[in-house]
Length: 287
Image 1 (cartoon, helix red, strand yellow):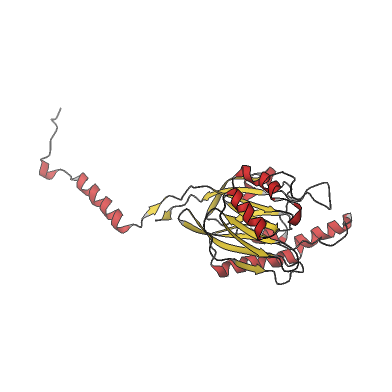
Image 2: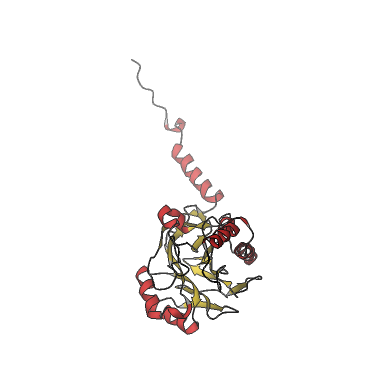
């Protein structure tokens, strides 16, 4: 059995010194990174049905869900909007009126908003539009967008079965006003430089229609987190049918991920609101 040979101190490998040198090198050469911010952002979109829903009724629906960001359609006027904001603690707002109907779209936010940007649909016969503004949220900036697309059934008598079938065919396979508005929306947001985006609204189009398929090339649908919620109807007003259609959406850019999403089935308006709780996507972010 051979005795262990102990190297003199001068010949031992100075591994601690090399480890410190490696750490210093990483600090100097590599970019500084931090984990994504996990502060949740509670987003709701809601079509308030114009003059038919009082502020007290709307608050009874909204308040239990503690929204941080509200993307609204068919808002009566600015006084109505400001009253909702005060009651919900959402101090910052923008309102954009429809051009051919009463009311408008709006954004309510817990955090400061940048200047309002509007996009009236070029081919709209109803004066609908989109409204966008930057939100200063948790040391980052995100574009919030409230959208209302044209209703294909407005001003028409209740459709027959065959008329409904024709409507679905057109929405799924042809270029309808909703499809044109979806393209205009995406192009407009790109021109604004709105890379980090949250979009909510009444799209008057069902899942997998051409407008939805187009938007999902660039954004994600919050309700896709839950199959039961994904197909849950959001419009229960006339014309009635055996199934409630989902026409209200919260879309978001890949900078975010959903931790909760649901259709709030409360019959105050003729639409149900949609809630989405978002956090930053779990990618490493530069400091």
